Image (cartoon, rainbow, N blue to C red; front, side):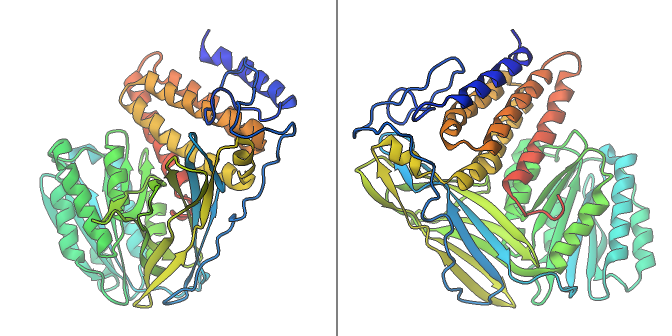
Length: 500
């Protein structure tokens, strides 16, 4: 029987199970193990303490909203957070997620910061036709939007780099700039490393009182193959350290989406996937607005090393460690009116019953040319032996958001990668593991949004299988990987990208 045929049967089984949920439904086997089968009865496992006959309701965790500590520096943002639970299970599940919310205090005022914007454009042979036409038209529209204090530059690359337009005042000779862009022709290789090197040399360090932004556009694989990937990511990291965010835009079907997302993350910018390049003008406009309305730059969240607790993930962003084991995540800039949300995942080691302190989140930033810092005390969680108390410490709203926004999009990234590698079994196994974790938990939590998400999960499995059927399988897998991965990228970084 195919998975397509199984979908309605499975959903019917889920609906019936929801009508008669026994106490501690979703828990089977030994303490801490969660297993799923639509035909099994859910029986609570023995716990270290006597269980009650009533199912405890999911509660709002005491630390649902964690207040921001006093801000030392310009008061341009709020820093808040919430936990998805306040307990972990001894000898079982030690996962705790915390959502960090960074909000600009200032709303858009119409006042623009003078901006340096540099476009790094792939003009290799594969960009010929519609792609280069869209790229040129979007760049010309961008030049038309620039203000009297803005500066614009353009670097192109094919067999080598060319500084087509050095960083100049945008209004000095707008007609000449438009004509120079219009004269670009596609042809040659994809010397991305040299192209980015030229861009970094032009931009240098961020100039005080000005915002900076680099936008890289490419439709192909860089000369040098995977051997140059570390170099490209290192270049992007230098741009982020200089507080000049670097955004990566992949166009068409031939570029390496894994590389482009790594470049965007290392450069603290955004990642976009465009099938044809038709939406490139809107992306340029958004990137200009982000830079021109910036209220803080150099945002970095750090977590000190805490015994018994390991930070395992932060919305898929690169984790950086110092010699003491402290972890930091670079987030880039914050524009007026922006609210950014990322989920941080901790693993609490097994041990004695009792309180376990979580690391304090420390947000560093720069605003009004002054440094600032805000600290968010995450508090602690309780290591429980009793499953009922562990489940009762789950916050329904926070857990729902952590599953639907963070875990599901993390799954989509994993599935997209497996499909790109041609591994159907790995993609379906990841989907099955996600279902096994969250179906029984939701029988207890009873979240309608998670129930809908589990329905969507079955459609994701069907899409995976369809990409391995019929003709043009490689093309279908490539398209699925890019579109699914891009959707997941945006989903895990809520509020990071304007209008997308």
